Length: 138
Image 1: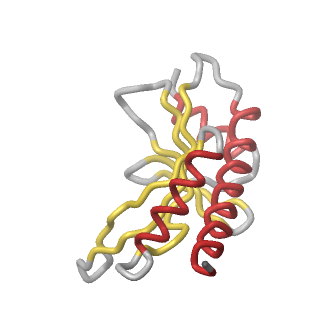
Image 2 (image 1 turned 90 degrees about the vertical axis):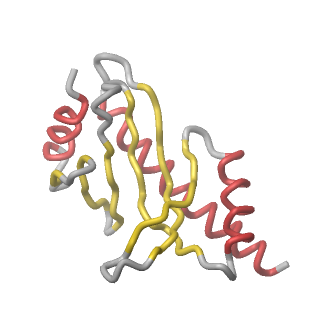
């Protein structure tokens, strides 16, 4: 099973216009960026991500971590975490990423997995932003 190839074919068949990146497959859905990460050492590992959903700063880090923890404990199969990347000038930028992670069987039905993954990632993003707003208001 080549899950990466299956994912590329599925996305193309569904009209997503996917493209290969060094990390896996990138595509957009309703204006939102998604990344499917391939893991060459684990062909059954399925990880779809919504990158950089919120910027983390020194001023908001405590609130962000609290909101992330709340979402991680309440939404199935999705987890939020921070990722550090360098911008074009080499400056470190930290942002929150949302990940949908499962172990797929040897004949995954992506038509069942991908739409639900997208829905769960969108829901996690909304829950995170809502919880962050609640924390900021208190």
